[in-house]
Image (cartoon, rainbow, N blue to C red; front, top):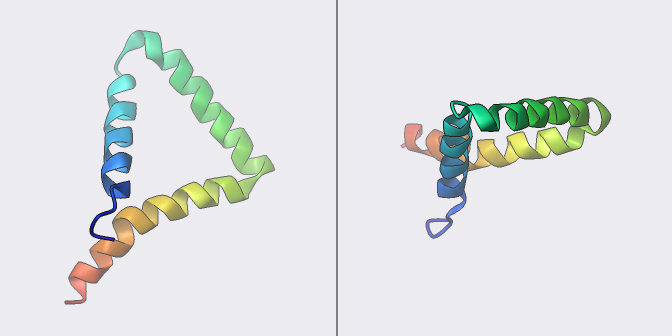
Length: 69
């Protein structure tokens, strides 16, 4: 797991997403994407849960290990 770049990819994605929120031409696309993800969550919630589990595994579980030592 120490050679995994999954954490870095998530961080880059989140920073890119937050940055794009402040770029006016990108805002309509972000709004559409968020609405789409909301629709997916009601029709196929396993996709949302998979995304959340991936993020939790990337950040949360690694952090929990630090607290238990």
